[in-house]
Image (cartoon, one colour):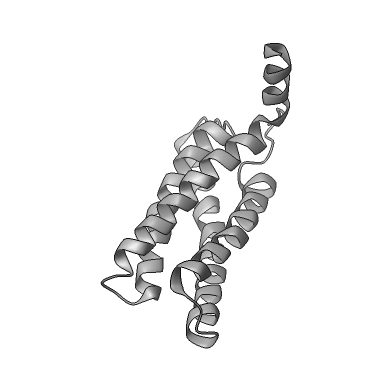
Length: 140
């Protein structure tokens, strides 16, 4: 049984790690949003939540999800720029969902945030896997 679990982990490590750290990133995003949404408009709370969760996501995705090895400072900066650039794209999608869900459809802030995060996590995995931490000569 232990060998089977080890084989499954090795085979699906990237996806499982992304689900674990993506879940933690989402949790950070929702908690920070919930805290700041009590004091500021939802779009400001959402921006702060996005910033903190993206910082966490970059570190965990680089180290544990995609095992990205960048040999030079320039390579790190290119990877980081790509990561934050794609996350900026998902930020605008995130804000759009929040605006439509809360201001247009008058949905509950936290319920809209939960739905929003499901969509954003899927988009971010796609961006990370295919564009940011893509295979650089080894299998992820």
